[in-house]
Length: 282
Image (cartoon, rainbow, N blue to C red):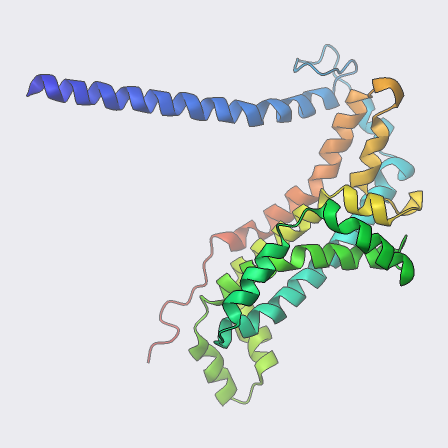
């Protein structure tokens, strides 16, 4: 009996060690690129190696913190992604509400078709979209890019919003209707505030996906002054394989800051739940 117990203990220890080693290996694959970005941004002689800087310097940040290199592209990115995210969240809430509150045989086919739309590669639809935008005079416009950003993120946003909206009891809306509120007021004043974590998830996900998108603005925008930071970062890759690694790392840190700040601002809503305990009792 003791021998069997010892064997089982040894087996469990080996499995734990194997799992810990696998997790450590996975963690290293994420930590090493981040370490390269941080260290290279303050290294005067940065290259592709992960190494401690031989000479600490903030010259790389001074070189990229200029209007034409950083400020204007970041402002363009904020305008594009901010407006498109607001449009996506608003349309997703309006589309998810009837799917969540009204039962129909067409709900599941509609949701399945919507989810299928997210599987289409962006390169497969860019040619007809480009031709359409040329005909309606939306090419090389911020508005056209915002519309396409919102349309591309809307299918999955509707799915997420609908699943979160299902967790809000309909009895709360019925109580608001009894007090004289209409359907839209019930959505805005009752449902959306209670599903704050869901709105936060959709907001962060949509903004992050748009923020890192290179292909769409590269195809739809032609004027250099309108290019977002996701496209202007390509300027650090010079001809014949030459790359300014230090400036690229510094720009990457600045470029990722808005997404990190957005996540920090809304992270308080992630774990807050819907706080509906006892709301429909009595």
